[in-house]
Amino acid sequence: MKKKEAIFIASILVIAGILGLGFRISGQRSHNTIRITVDGKEFGTYSLSKDQVIHIGDTNVCEIKDGKVTMIEATCPDHYCMKQKAVDEHGGSIICLPNKVVIEGKDSAEPSESDDSPKIDAVT
Ligand SMILES: [Zn+2]
Image 1 (spheres, rainbow, N blue to C red):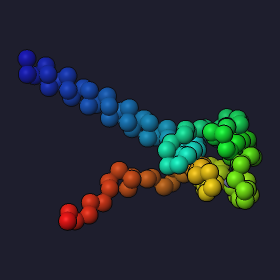
Image 2 (image 1 turned 90 degrees about the horizontal axis):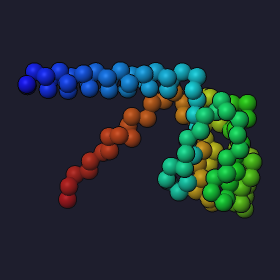
Image 3 (image 1 turned 90 degrees about the vertical axis):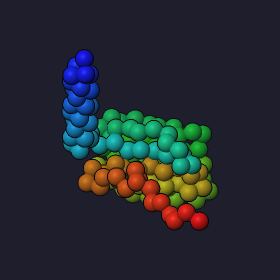
Image 4 (image 1 turned 180 degrees about the horizontal axis):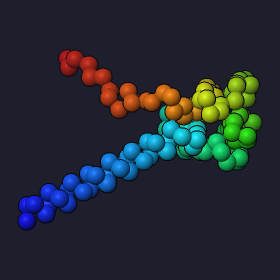
């Protein structure tokens, strides 16, 4: 009985490990994505390999074309985000400060593991 349980748990761990590894490897190859956040909340992730126009809420519109993403419309007064450099497979970011919209290229060369380990300050 106990042995069966152990085998069951072990096989789940092995499958989870394989899946995790598979995702990690596929994430580092060709499938470049961008992540859009609005006011610190995730709006969505999109593949750079598919041309499309994304409406970000009511304020901003960005366009993915030829593996690059640019802001094509924005309600902000300065339109600074529309002048920023396109985000492509090398990463980068477009930030619209007035509308709190951030488009980030997910650069596979920079794993963001530090996000998962928050620093614990001394308890006062
Ligand atoms: Zn803007």
